[in-house]
Image 1: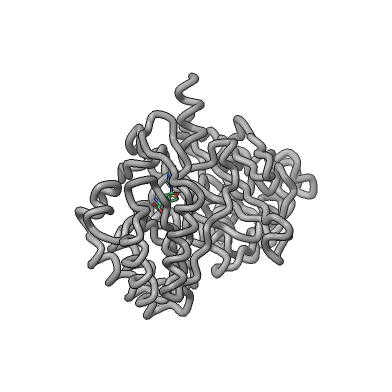
Image 2 (image 1 turned 60 degrees about the horizontal axis):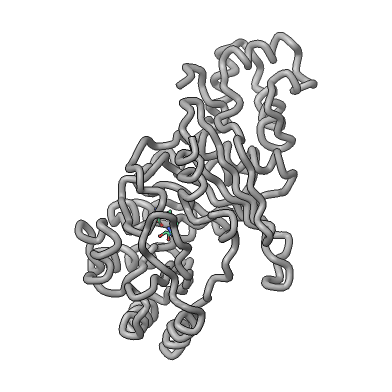
Length: 352
Ligand code: SAH
């Protein structure tokens, strides 16, 4: 890894301090930040309103780019998937999901799905990200730069974030939180905290810690099973933090935040799609006043799992509705570009 500081890892006041160390006045901070975030460029040389000597100092002290775009895949539904290379050549994936006009009133919404780790240690049985095990945490600059680079390359204003890419965000807590605070800051991209959703496989201590943060992030729990029996089968983390503990942590989160909780529930054929699971999930969601997102499983090459047919998914959704639960059946986006986490990287590494 480079020894220079990643400029996108820094808070505004930290950059001011660093610039002071280079004998630069404080007013330079906002000039530099403009080029880093508001009209982003990938080269200090292009910061044309800064004196050449300052541009040289910046280039000698800071790393401007943390991610390098290797490949972009466009899906027919306008989802775009980016394969990024990091300084140590590790690969991560990031997805841009524009709102589909007609499906939602907010057609100007652009959501970026960011990764927080290279690989993943949690080994959920259905997921491509964990197949090669964990590699490392991303630093804050690497998380921030996924969003800035997509903003720079597509010229889209990014309005929403979901921390649902590769990795377990709560297992990289400090870097993730720093990155989200930077992305939220008005001097950076100004993405509202309520427009940021953090998704976890169920890391109970992380949920408890997040509950104490003042920022109003939305929390999504990757539940995927309404009993310990089903969850144990597909998510090893459930053996450490079983449902009872997970739900208690969710309740604590809800008691400190006014925002609602979301349960992500991926439907896998013959594994978690019985009506018994639907009734249990319905009761659980009702108790926590959680919303449920149903996602038909996105098949991963080499793994045995399949998605249930459409009727079965609809039945599951209908059963939840009988409990008074608002359950959406996610309209698939990006299936034709392998947008499920870890799939593009897997393909690229497999081919390499
Ligand atoms: N580690 C975090 C965030 C990353 S995964 C978490 O578990 O929440 C983002 C979501 O995609 C999770 O709900 C995960 O379970 C789900 N997912 C993983 N592989 C999938 C696949 N093949 N099809 C559909 N959803 C998948």
